[in-house]
Amino acid sequence: MATATLAARTQPVWRRILRAPFTGETWRRAAYLLIALPAALLCLVLALVGSPAAGRIQRSLARRLLGVEVPEPDRASKPLALAHAVLTLPLTLIATVVTGFVWFVMLINLGYPLRPDSDQPADYAQSWGGPTLAGAWGVHILGGTVLVGLLMPWIVKGFTALQGRLVRAFHGADRAGLRSSALIALVVAAGCVLLSIPIIHQF
Image (cartoon, rainbow, N blue to C red; front, side, top):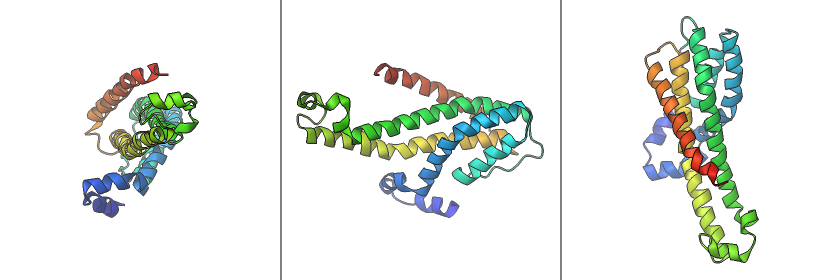
């Protein structure tokens, strides 16, 4: 995996952007986000009862899906496992909602003619790319599906990179980046909540 990652980094930027939605790394990271929420709930329960299994689960997921090797500490810290579970649960929920929303945007723009707000010719005249259905559909596919699809891997990578950093800090042998990782996670979570407010008001 390391060799493939190194080879990908030597490619021109434009090629990396175009290839990103179709790489195994992107889909492994997307799978991590799908699994991370139920795993976070399970790890919260395990941490509350003082089980060291929470750390093993998080390290295993990070290794298998993110390619992040986290050395096991000599002695598992129950308070840190609980702190990680409490911190990562809302962050994981936000990551799931954000990525789910982006997928939703891609799908509704791909199927633009089927949207309930675009079933009349008058609607096409007011839409981007109008006044014809073909023009409106083409613009929505280009902007809402293709461009958003090219952006999606980097959103997924950002969330999973932070998750991997948190696992390394809270469940690894080296605690050096614990405070900075926790602070970044709190800032990202707060920023996502603030950004979601105007989006929610549109519905």
